[in-house]
Length: 436
Ligand SMILES: CSC[C@H]1O[C@@H](n2cnc3c(O)ncnc32)[C@H](O)[C@@H]1O
Ligand SMILES: [Zn+2]
Image (cartoon, rainbow, N blue to C red; front, side, top):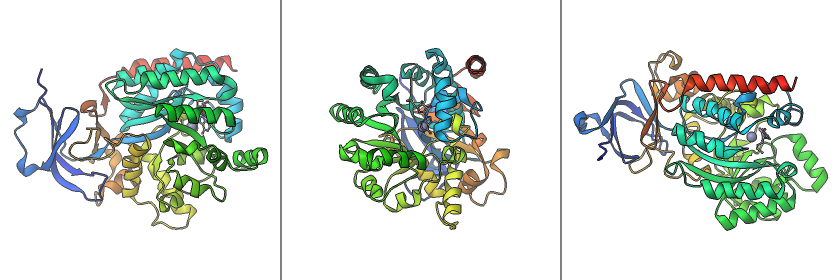
């Protein structure tokens, strides 16, 4: 049947993200999954010409937010392991819990993560975890966009795991009507050997796949690495051309001399995770230096166990505040930069160049923010300021992905929220009880 498209009318303001300009009193037409037209309400066509229409009075339109580093199923570990440093947290609490996860647990943990991401305005995310075929089921059902990768820890996964992760990446790339793409994902240079990482580098190049990795997250990790290998993790990877593929490097908090030059020359994409870095006491990534060097910086939440939510609006606030306080300079990282990190930069990081901005011809991944919501606060001098400095994700009203309305008036249309809460609670308790 011929699809008539969606009309969004009376949009208070549009923030395109690729330019600082704010468009006021607009309408936008979505057709065939894409943004067909953006224009002033003065020339708005009749709503009869459309199959669906949204009245966006009092609402502002933004590109969908992009979470460039998470482990969705870790929602099951929310509140299970707080107030610990990274290695102790992983070794004493997280890895023992993960060893007890079944594939169904991962399905329901991912479902809880995706539900929370959608309701908080995230339209695309990058996930590194286990049993990603089950995560892919959730992505397909929910309508979200995702870049999925099977995480690899050499001691657990070995050659067989590597082969499986490649098979997953090849089989699932460009599935769910194109909403799922894939990467390879060695966990970190301290859990994978040179030979293993070199093999992944070769496989990524041969199969045109990007690579997602945790990199230089804590001071102790970098110091231990240097003691063992005599060079920093970044220099170590550079020695066998790891960075020649498209790289999504999560964290990148602690640099050694020479590292910044490598990141810049090799166009490494950095997923900055300020809340997780703060909570685990890992430090503050020098993103001001990255941005000054024209390195692409986007934002990620990391897993819920180190955050403890998936709210990119509060993540952005933390990103700005940490740079301001750490450098004694309140002018650092303004709201337009936050918007860019959450959208265009995220799209570049995930190789999703058709998303991340509001422009005719781009994919219709869009969110409407309700400026009348209690959480948005008053007065309204500057709506982007209220969004990032006063609000939280409860202000998200509508989420559209690939031209489809997924969240309407704050309610999810594609997933069974009550069932997800029930399953997540039951499964998280079962594992925690076993580990007591
Ligand atoms: C191999 S799948 C991903 C693996 O990473 C673990 N993880 C979660 N958060 C972090 C982090 O901040 N640094 C390092 N590793 C992390 C997760 O629990 C999985 O085991
Ligand atoms: Zn992580």
